[in-house]
Amino acid sequence: MSAVTSLDTPVPRKKTVSERKRRARQVLLQDNLARALIVFLGFVLWQVGVNQKFIDPFLMGEPRGIALEAWRMIETGQLLTDVVATVQATITGFLGGSILGSLCGLALWYARRLARILDPFFIALNSLPKIALAPMIIIWFGSGIFSKIALAFIATFVVSLLTAYQGSHQIDANLVNMMRSLGATKRQIFAKLVIPATMPWIISAFRLNIGFALIAEVGGEFIASEVGLGHLIFVNGNLFNLNAVWVGVLALMIVAACLYLFVTRIEKRLFAWAKH
Image 1 (cartoon, helix red, strand yellow):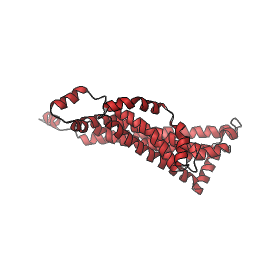
Image 2 (cartoon, rainbow, N blue to C red; image 1 turned 45 degrees about the vertical axis):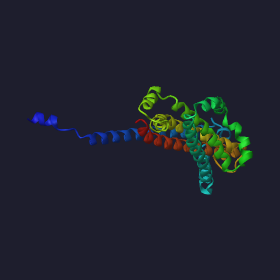
Image 3 (cartoon, rainbow, N blue to C red; image 1 turned 180 degrees about the horizontal axis):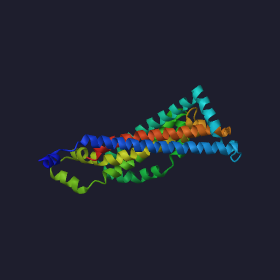
Image 4 (tube, helix red, strand yellow; image 1 turned 135 degrees about the vertical axis):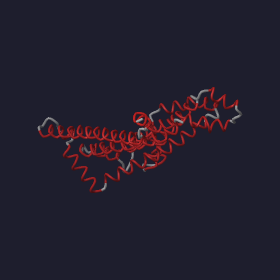
């Protein structure tokens, strides 16, 4: 009886899930500590090389000078102002371009002939480096934040449009024919089949677009801007202040990592729904 009872006793699932989550957090913490150690050792070796005259601080900068420049910019509020300007323009252009581009790409499923006609133009625009449009965009919108938003919007709009359009045309034709045979209208097929099946494509494009939006926005700041991390890097580069340039580069790397992590978390949440 005891053997039967032990076999019939269910294994608590919640404990297993909690152990897996705790183990995953431990692994993530260990990985992050290893990454932080690598960065720390890199800066230490860099500073040692400067102190031993192996590295020229005028050409490469030095960690101590970078820290002093970063602290100065934090105290004056310059670094926070530049970060906020870059992030604001990037996110605004990213959201506008990604959402509107995805909607337009899905809408082309309704007009397949129009999509075939416009397809070469979309491909050509997607192949064009968006920074080439920066001079015209800046002339139209000025050197303020709106020109940077426009650049980020254009960089993400075309990618989202093409991705959504291609995803909607990768749906199995047998599924579409089956729904038609069951009496489904074109609108019902679009809402019940096309949108859910294309959603993984759209969400994947979002992860690519956050990088494209940041590249376009910073490129616009290099050409003409009064604020932003790109402006910070460009101005101090012309002044040969390598320590300040490194502050802008490192801040830009942190911003890019945070934005990518934010989009990835949204993707994980939405992709669970999209799979079904």
